[in-house]
Length: 320
Length: 320
Image 1 (cartoon, rainbow over the protein chains, first blue to last red):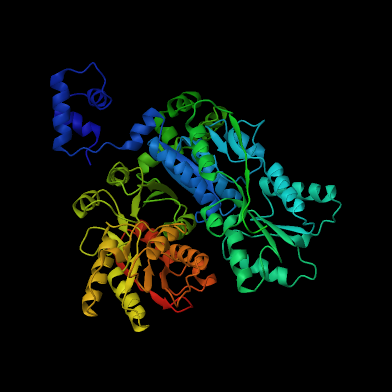
Image 2: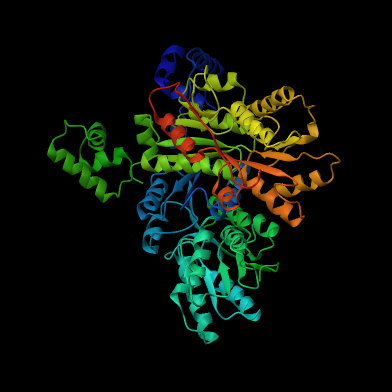
């Protein structure tokens, strides 16, 4: 492939002139410009876009850190991010972490090394001191309450949302309430656990660690939850499930096992995904696509350190 | 940020020497190497990775063209691609096309401009002459039978698979068979339509365009299919549905409307996604994650023009 030195030689001009033509610099005579363009055509010159980005300092790439690529919660967030990226002529670099810290650090290094213009972290693993250190290299946007840090964020208050859901179940006569969640660690999981414990204290119920079901991420994870419930001597009468898709799996498997919903078990989902509507699942609406869209706009916004809280809404259907 | 000229000045060496140290070139004295490393430390020098990629000609980025980010079929393909990318220390640039040709061309241009090392097209829009033109710039891998073109591919023979499914439904006594599909255009859709028409001819049934249901992509799309069926005077007695998730939506909404499966309507899915197992949906297993994994390995394989056919498997459950 021809480089600009060869173009210069063929056109009989200096390398500087070629560079000026490429960058639309005004001080080039028409003759020289024509000679350069002719030489470029002759040699089928392809400009290396990385060289262009290098000189301009932008890549039009935004990094997106997600734990898994194929999960409805992150799927909806990425849908919102991607829709806005398409509109703004950006492309996304997907960094799948499997919740391994090293992979998140790799993503932060892409920001440091200017391979991406900004980084959106959908679910954080690294401690704040690490995030704050890399935030000096470029915009970082998070999907959790990040006020007080050198980043932007769009977030749900998971403590408040959890209390809201628990109070609703309690108002329907439930005291033995359990919950299903994706992972044990992580800032959002901790907030929910705190809300759960505070709520139990308030209603004078004892905390039972068996009432928390971890690793609930997919439809098929509902099967193990129901199997565990069936083996408990004193199972919860209501379940708060942090993903509608898992709630749908639980509901489907309960029907299989002749467990009547909501009489034997009340089920409350999270997100208000389309599956919740069709299966009549009572849920807490979280506008994930809208959140994704806002995360993207914060990533390309020159104003740093903006924070927006998104509110959830209770959707009453037939499973509580 | 310091550049290598400044490093050279501080270290009292030539720019060439700095460059040699950065590239681990052997012919640098220990003294000079130490001086350069000290200067880099002093100035907190950050190497611009784009410059490194520029000199090495690799980016460790693979482009992935998908029509939508949040769809279970492409979700599983991307899961396979991403898993293999993580293992091989590559990252993915996601290009969402919404089935717009311009966006696919943008992705092809990323390959031309060396922004990515290879391009995987999960669902093609552009005509072959365009794809073949860009294939001269770098590896392109497709998820459809691409033998005879300057690319690699891992594919299902959708004609054969469709015939297999239709023959199974026919063997169960169905003659009025309809099908649900994502989009009307596209190579795979055409192959399926041809298989459908050839099959009808073989069993001496007349083709009825109303028996094809388009825009069936998501769980909730099942609702409109069932509503259309309920308004038909002579509805199909069996449906072949090219996505388990749509089949699950149809099944769920049928139960709502007291349509008994399989007595009133036989349902056959595609993919064998987890939801098909839990909802006992008869389906044709397509190992999408495995296909995704193979697509990625073909993208980084120096051997071009490899083609692999993946075979489907009939999974009998309770909906036919």
